[in-house]
Length: 173
Image 1 (cartoon, helix red, strand yellow):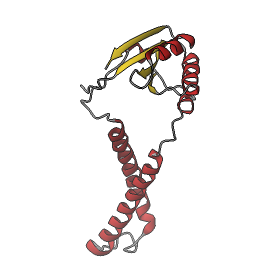
Image 2 (cartoon, rainbow, N blue to C red; image 1 turned 180 degrees about the vertical axis):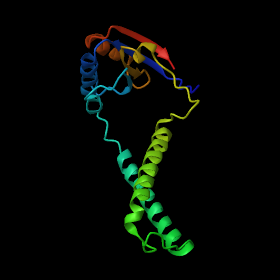
Image 3 (spheres, rainbow, N blue to C red; image 1 turned 90 degrees about the horizontal axis):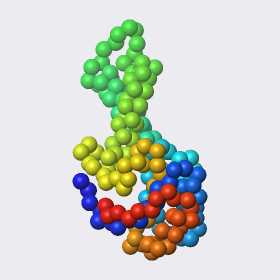
Image 4 (tube, one colour; image 1 turned 180 degrees about the horizontal axis):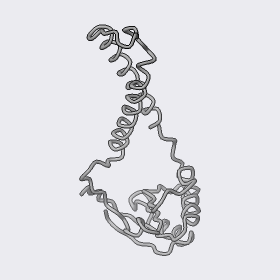
């Protein structure tokens, strides 16, 4: 299990709107948020947290282009140099016949490349166990956590209380 050795103060919320308001209030007070845990994606949370757009789609394009190039160049070499056979009256280099395999390898390279890139960036490989602050965040509760080394504990607790947190706890992960 990965150990962070981070002392946290966190609040449990029962509604995503209260959580979004707490995030906006923390950002307006320039408090450093350690993490936010939710049982499902919350619309508008990335904007409230000030997160930039993911660049995974750029990686997907590059992987897809690599798949297209691999398929097209591979079939060109196979059918013109390595195994030049005329079948069905087609010429050696028949681009329309290459399209289905080129499409499939484009999708395959993009899918596998983006999956491996995402798992690598997020540390989601099999066998990795990440600590959970509160198990209820996988069910129906929302959690906003602050690192006590970056934020004063009393300031964080007062913000959580003012924003409607059901519970305010501390924990070391």
